Image 1: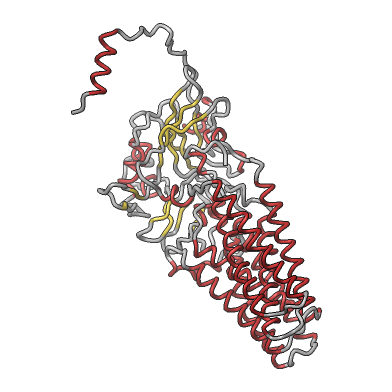
Image 2 (image 1 turned 120 degrees about the vertical axis):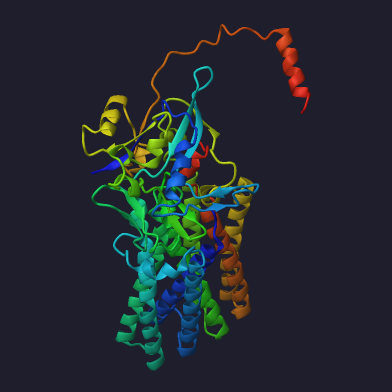
Length: 231
Length: 312
């Protein structure tokens, strides 16, 4: 088995729901807690397994906003595992999930240097490296209903931008999506062969901008007043 | 990359320690310096002190040092593990060599030389492993080159050789040949460093386009998704003004190579004072520490592409 995610950049709305749901599930999961530093202060920070960034692709008027969720890619050539001096990082043979044994990690940060995708974050309270587990403690839990045996981020996503499945099975949902939508790997030139794939945005018709009416005098004045007047 | 002072101190100090030991053994065997028991003992002790200090300093950057003992068990895949194993293996062989020199009163002896050359081989392997810790990372193009371990080995030998000349000068020995070797090593080190800086200018590798997969249009970061720093920004997004980087390169070449080499040349020409050598050593360590700081500060991890950098 080669378990992983497919992330559909066409429909991701950038709501950060996956990241929040991941944090909620995993903070009491096998590598929890996902510590927060200064959570109610001016510069709240902490450990997250998902990061969502937003990019602008292309130039106006042919530009598009792309919301870009990233988590561990569970690479086939996982250098983070090879460089680990303690053997705390390992890749499971049976399903390809990359994990960190919290009892062995010495917190040297070396694996995070070897990871090109920023998937590993040090928890400064425990001094150990933490990362996405692909919700190992969900997907194999037979007490859950079949439909719930998926990573937390996948179940939560309101836009259905995340899909979970076995890439070794050519007829699985993820393999089919990759085949039909041209799913691709990030930074393939580095040779990590990441398992997770990204589906590019569909080509859609342009939204015309030429016929947008010019601003009226009243709306210009309103805009100016709104800028000047403070609450 | 964030330049961690514990790692800078570790690589500079232990590198100089291994270099000093290598030069000590080679000088004893090939006779380019007069090595008697006091010189061998002081060089040996200084070398082991630098190495041990460096190794202890390296454990300071661990977030969970109670598991540090596990770091010896992934010799098959991890250069960090290999470095640890070689570093520990070095101690008994080096001590055996020093005992041999002491018992044998520093006279030529094949067995002692064999042990000494074994220590040299292990020392070289250790420094090579240190270089490969950085050199093997595909994520950082400034490190992923054969120049990285070359640089570590050459700078270890150069710094060690200057230390040996200082010990010889304080012991009142003839330093001519040793200082010559040292100047040659400093020159080689400076040359390799200059090649490295020249090579690094050419931008290669992944871009924000290959990182996101959008290779047919310009990609710009709109939002990083977090309002304060994260582990990733703290560890990888270290930014130094480019003018400071250029100034530090001048410091590297002036303090690290030019001043020690010039002082050594003065010493060869009739001023064989230990104090002059000490000034050279201090300048050299300042310069090489700047070199190591730059090595980290100029390294750009590919994660910066996701934080908006167009290339590394």
